[in-house]
Every structure is written in structure tokens, then in C-alpha cells.
Length: 256
Image (cartoon, rainbow, N blue to C red; front, side, top):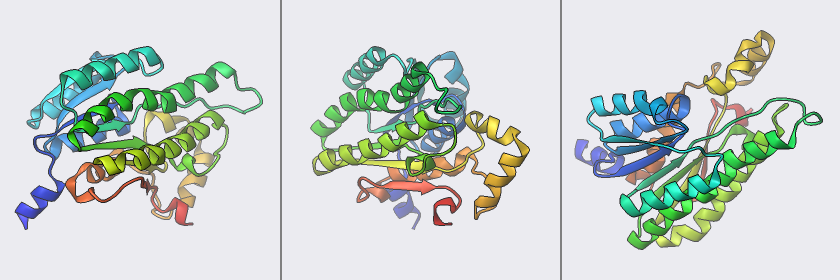
């Protein structure tokens, strides 16, 4: 049994690249992949900010290097991906980097709208394709995009975020349709409400926090590790026949 588990759920010998790996969901995903045996390439706005994640991974025996890239700079995103795809054999790409801008739609600026769409959606388009080209040549690869509960709903005062995350699901399915026949698994996870920096304003509002928690059948918000386990599964050999799927990790929110 242990041999089967290792074969189906282990990632030894693979290299995973994770964007937005400094804190929260991205850090938890990176460490989960490291615990499963993968070596890591960690991408974030500042290499210094990724040092903690890299250190924890290294303490657990994983190789870990950090790459500074601003995901709102699409030229830099493209160049970084092209260079890494040439220089390293990347088996797993996790597109986690994302931002949110809160406020009423009527008063929203185009600058905020554009920045959110750029980081949350356009960067996935630019970042993933160079790695996918190399994966297609090898006939193997895993891509996991981080969508959201708001890939299916509009939310409140987060129009750009909701639009971007709807787009992530569509892009995930389009990638899968093209690349599944070529040996790649492309899927997404859609977190519900997670205790991260992005949701700090919601949790700081006592009434909003109570209302949201009451709507979650599990009776609690997710921890980043709850999302990380789902991503690790999608990256594992056990998920080799899962294509174009959006795995919702929401404590039962969508079922209510």
C-alpha cells in the first residue's frame, strides 16, 4: 500500500513553479508540493519576500530557488517564463498570483480594473504558454490555475476580481481542450473564503464575517493548507485522468 501511495501521490523528481508563493495560499501550495517531494521555483514580486517559503522547503529536503517578477509587467512575465522554460525542466506550473481591489463598481477606476485583470488573468496567459510548449514536446505536464468561488458568482464590490476569476475558469478549460490530447493536465482550484491577507478587510468587519461564516456549511473559513491539499492532488499522478476540471474548495458554500 505504501508503495502505491508513494507512486500515486508522490512528486519526487519533479520541479514545480509556483507564482505568488510569499504568503497565504501560494506559500501553502508550494510547501505542500515540497512535502510531496517536488523541488520548487518560487516566483514573487520580491525574491527577498520568498525567502521564508524557500527556507521552510529546504529544511524539508526540497530544492528551492526564488525568482523576482512583477506579474503586472507582462513583458517581464513573458521573458521570465521563456528563460525558465529554456533553462529548467518544469513539470508543474501553479498560477496562484492574484490581487483584489475592493469598492463600488460605479466609483472604480479603469486603472484598478486593468491591474486586476492583468495580474489575475493576463499573466496566466503569458506565463503558462512557454512552459506548456516545452511540456508538449515531452508529452507531460501539470498546470493548476487558482480560480475562486467568485468564478461562479459576482460578489460584492469586487467586480474586476470576479471578472478575472470567471476568465481564469474559461482559460483553464480552453487550455485543457487544446493540451489534454498532448499529455498535459490543466485544471483549477476554486477556493471559497480563506483566511489570508486578501480577506483581512472582510474578517475585520464583525457583521460581514458572521454573515459569511453562517453561510458556510462547514462552519469555518478555510486555512491556506485546505487549498494546498487540493492542488497537490491535482499535480499528482493520481489525478492523471482529470482534465479541465475546477475543483471547488469552499466548505460546502456552493452546495447550499
